[in-house]
Length: 402
Image 1 (spheres, helix red, strand yellow):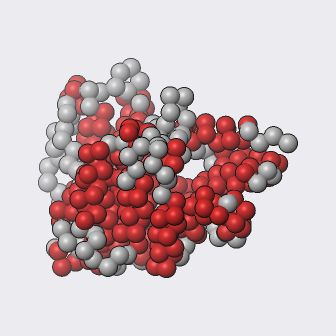
Image 2 (tube, one colour):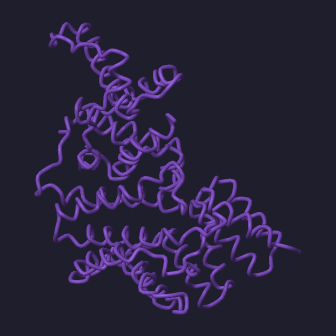
């Protein structure tokens, strides 16, 4: 139960604590202590509002910590608030302010090194583990932990204000904010069935991107991300079949897609197409090509998708873009040519990137190289995919016969 509460509300609680106490380390430590207390306090029965319980206890822990520090430094503090009774903690439903967007902007302050901004936000606001963040950025976990430590220290030393800055300062933080949201949503999207520890990010990202769209109504990259999230979430009802197995995009039945979200995505996309296209706009167009299908009888838009990936490479040439392009390449020019492209990425830091191994496995199987395909499937499965994706990989591996 505790794990589920943290998955759903941990980021919101951390953000609220950080906004109140203006100390990132204190917020994390207080929530960790509250979780430790919850293990015994919830042994017989959970509280009526578990997230509220954690928030209230973590607030008390943080206040106690500040008072102990004040005593050591001979600093006067106001009289402490009355200690809540056990009954109050178990039945109360305290309001947890949703400060996540504020904390995202704090973590993306220009005083923090660009490489650390998104990582810090993903750790504090989205609750991703250090391992998950390191995999997302294709770096070693120890290096990631060093970045996080330095970033938190920079926020404390520089006296970064815990507030959403005025509009004049949004631009200098925007790319880091959007990069953070992209990685957070990627973890939700990777779980087709929406049952994993990051399942809530999908719906939450709809609200956060809508809020950003209101803040920045003429910013095309904001609208591009909002469109992409809506196109991707619209397809969720068709992403898993009756067996609980992932359905590849080209095999999904468009009749099952959410027409309302697709319409919203198109409205956001309209605000992108009046500006010169940048990377996020091109990504939104790729999603729009798929969402233009009305039924499985319509041809898959592989030629248009490949053309758009070529355009994306021109403005953002990275291993993940090349990997995604190889999927379209395989459908148009065959698995052999696509495998050459994927094989060229073997030293690009993708060893812990599940889609890399999954695509290699599929291409090797299509080339009839069963032994190599099984090894690639094993490498993908070793990275603990979500259940629907694991079932699809298991099926693919089972078809690799000599």
